[in-house]
Image 1 (cartoon, rainbow, N blue to C red):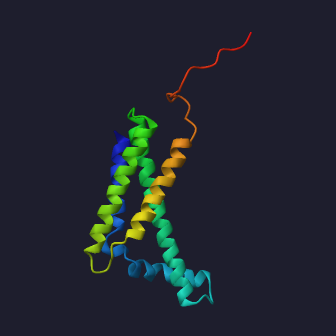
Image 2: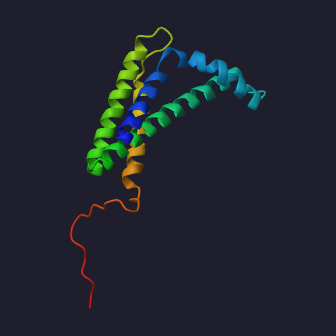
Image 3: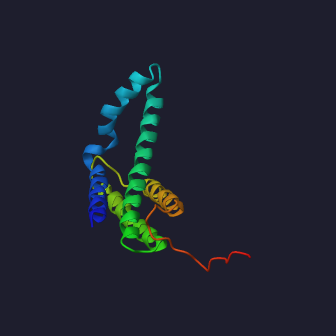
Length: 152
């Protein structure tokens, strides 16, 4: 139950990050001066490009965490890894779509199909990793097929 609560809280946080206070103009007021201090002599255009890359990496990270939290919630609730991954991806895609639609209604934001694809990439990449991760000790192991008999 706690895993579903954590996943839901992270989903709410991701949607909050899509609101007006986190528009590029707003985050730029904080990030650009730090970048300028860290990289003196870098042109304003280059700093803006780095800021954009940081923002896109944040998209990937947000949705990777979202996917992992939902995957773990469904997986530990007894769903197969495939079902858990499908449910987690569906939630992530719905969240990304809702976020971009919401942003398209804000004067300081704009909805973006590119951002939706970036979000989907972050979620999908994490689910590929999570499904391939070794099982933790004490967890049920799903086996396909029969085990080989030892040779005499």
